[in-house]
Image: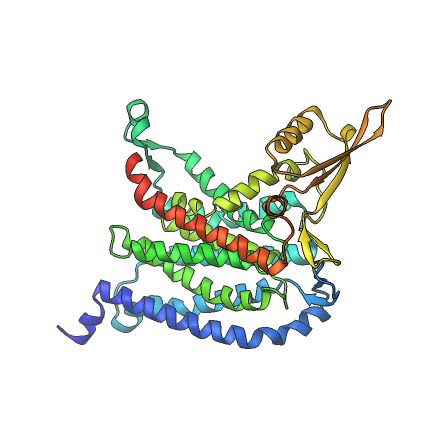
Length: 414
């Protein structure tokens, strides 16, 4: 066997490409860590700055630093393109247009989301726009899925097969599901925020979980799909780690909505094109719970303040649940039912005061409807760094349970 044909062996080529991907990502990560502080003054001069409301010292901190992490991700993945297809360049091997188009579509969707996320940081877009942006950015991804794969059939669990059958073709509804997955992943990380390190931290835990699942399936029947996922998730981890080191407590930079959109779309891309979108959602259980908890305020059933992050108590130096105040007359019948249910199950802490006995006017002071405020309500005030560690540990436990469900409990249903 000649040296050229030896290098062109598919399994060896995949190993070489992964090695090149890791090497490129590690190099980019080191460079990113070194140069990131050089952008701080530039961002502050441009007006991209904010004040950490959870600290006694009110100093300006550069915002939207997620765009630097996202830009480096694109640089690394662009540089990897010729390395990914080195057999075509070096040995005149036929180019796999199927894989080439998938890779470019993935980068296009992620790149669009980085751009739109930065636009949100600069222009402060409304929530309805934030729901539309991931939908638009996912269109190239869905079109490539339609052209290259177009598999919309799901396997039905054992208990339902007597009624539905072994499999079910969802058709157009499957594309609706994938589009909604992109919207959920981006916004789920975006609304689970407000303390130093939580956005990047939760993304890193999910990313490492995805990488572990790819390695578990490395020699399985869907090897190519998981290798494709690693081509994207390894550079993502490499670019998120330096950002986390600067964003963790005490934060020297803020990541902005750019990083949340960038991370969310990256997960959606690897889940959709890697064909493990349902497994991916198991890693998002804390985010799903936070979204369900946030629905009353996100959809305006309950008044929603601009910031729902925990409240800093300067006397104790601890974070406490932030609150929103409103009157019973401000709530519709449906809103009052939702508010009563959440209060009954102790998802929120409520203090009420009778303002006018004759008019039956009651003033409520309720903790905001987020998982962070819920955690503080249950376990009491916490230091910001400890709160972040507790929530990230919860994310790790959740991902561990996801693996147990995928590789043990799923045997009962499939």
